[in-house]
Length: 393
Ligand SMILES: NC(=O)c1ccc[n+]([C@@H]2O[C@H](COP(=O)([O-])OP(=O)(O)OC[C@H]3O[C@@H](n4cnc5c(N)ncnc54)[C@H](O)[C@@H]3O)[C@@H](O)[C@H]2O)c1
Ligand SMILES: [Fe+2]
Image (tube, rainbow, N blue to C red):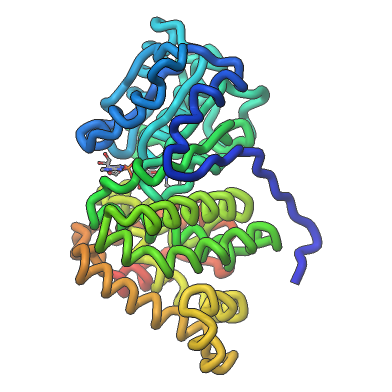
């Protein structure tokens, strides 16, 4: 059913394919940029990906202004400030993020500071606080997960308050996302599985949350179909370039979907488990997804039932009576979860992900105050959150 009102916005140019990286110098020229600052992390560098990336600039006439390769997981405002200082000192005119969600979101934060000529990220926390376009910004994702290359969100850790700050603005959408399968083929199986489950969660929550709309639905549905066909291949055989390219495209599509329709309780719980117990984002998504769907089941029966076609294919969809399709979706999701546990040791419970029972109360308190709950189909009280957490434990 069409919502009575909705908005959809995604101006990110996407270039995808083997050797897509080689087009970056030309794309920088189109953006009138000549001296990019590159933001990445040690894992990406140690996997040899910076060499592949830098090779694409050979004989291009573009001079890299600087490379910052120390972004930690769950990057914080002090890291963002330190990188902004380098950007200014090296007189850069644009930013290229090469990495997963951590370097990408860090680079988004840096772009806010250097454009606004500020040193205090907190001034811009929240929705629509930015009033002008940012510096030219290119993203080369190296995980197939967050979709941050195509979202208007940045999540950055606030060390003083021990919370993740959210920045939401159309100006945070990158100018260009470069999807090159060479950049994800070095991901180890467990990170492939976890980040892939993050992408799947984006698509499923986008399709079932209160702000769903027909355009984001189209992206979400296709993303689920592609992930379901490719995630196990990408985990089992990292060098399978077809599976890698498919997963990376699906993650971007899922990002476009949730950037326009939002996510829900699974993300609220996952952000909180991340803040309290440092559970990696994708691992938390995989653990919480079936429980979050069960919690919302009465409100999302129809939309989740439709998604059985994307997850499990036409034969299973046709063989399952309409009223049983949502439950069948959750059953098949659990089967996938188990396969990812067998193939890549992806945790299936909070306990296995390093959460202890005494943390559940704090996680519940944080979750019910998380912005992601706003578009969740069901209300969630502290008691409700505790029930879900205990099941997931
Ligand atoms: N802005 C958004 O829209 C959005 C959405 C969801 C999550 N996030 C944020 O993204 C972050 C998580 O990002 P992530 O899941 O992509 O993980 P990540 O960027 O933290 O990377 C995880 C690990 O994988 C390594 N790695 C990345 N690519 C690799 C490759 N190709 N080969 C080998 N190793 C590689 C990294 O070095 C790192 O150690 C969280 O902070 C989360 O809050 C943002
Ligand atoms: Fe996510």
